[in-house]
Image 1 (cartoon, rainbow, N blue to C red):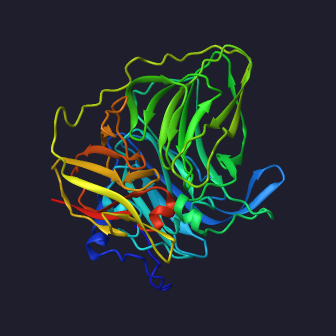
Image 2 (spheres, rainbow, N blue to C red):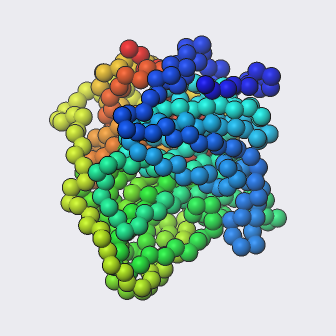
Length: 455
């Protein structure tokens, strides 16, 4: 059973979890059993300060999981049970949020449902994996410091009937802000509180502008995660076409061919990349995107370089149909909640971000089995990536227009002075949940809300 050596350290959480939350944790731990024929995958995660080499000759002091940034990529099958034993060797508390996973509330990994894991302590997460897709895990405590220093990793969950590719890779995009002396800059400043931090050093899998190689003639599956604090990635691969095959909640219905895709902070996308016909080199870069920040991006910025090597035979056939997604609604529907994203000026952060005119908003509960149709309305001049914990939603409208394709999501970009309509169904996982902007500085400055799912 989990161990909790918290009390001797006495560092209070921002929101002390209730006795109900502690009972929810115990119940979730006890009920997490593998499906027939599946496994219990036990993993030890250790959070500690490390020497993080981001490029040849460039090493910074980071905070890693199991000695590296990103932390280990966790791989499992649908129905497997994960048992993650987190030990904290840092100088401050931490927790791990399992981003995108539809797991019990007691395992979500926030201060609403658990006490932070104090230095020297251990906490055990245990839950069954219900969905295939590309997910990730990251600190949900003092995020503007802990994610910036490297406390994150990828989680890949597979199903039995997925398409086969010549090769698969996980690519975690990030950036960090380095001082002239090579140290990671401490957070702060009025502009940063408004924009969120966009670092001066772009990373893929913890390395600065790495070189990647693909064989001509082959098709790869790329699972891409945007782990940056605030940077939007308008992804291009040398302007060449690729196919979107999945988003936050796994595979979409049919592949969508395009030459670019926008990833807001915390977004994921799965791509079929290739085939390239000859040996050549392409820039993996983010194109200019105006998200309303003071810091303008007028030119493409490099994340990595893709080198196409000698031609090799391919076994890949990307099917025209990937998955059936049942629409939650068809036709007109009544809106059940308006979530208003806004801001005010304040003393603590310079800009205080709000939901429904309140920092750290306490929202009304929702009932299991009652369809939720939410209008997320952005009343500020900057874009906000809206993230819902623990549940997938479908997007009905963005600024009044339907999306290009139907998908399951947990994060959606809400344009400046725009709105997004989403629909989701609270299944039988009662407890304490949250939604918030995933620009970390906006989250910390109050753009988050807590709510109960009740029976």
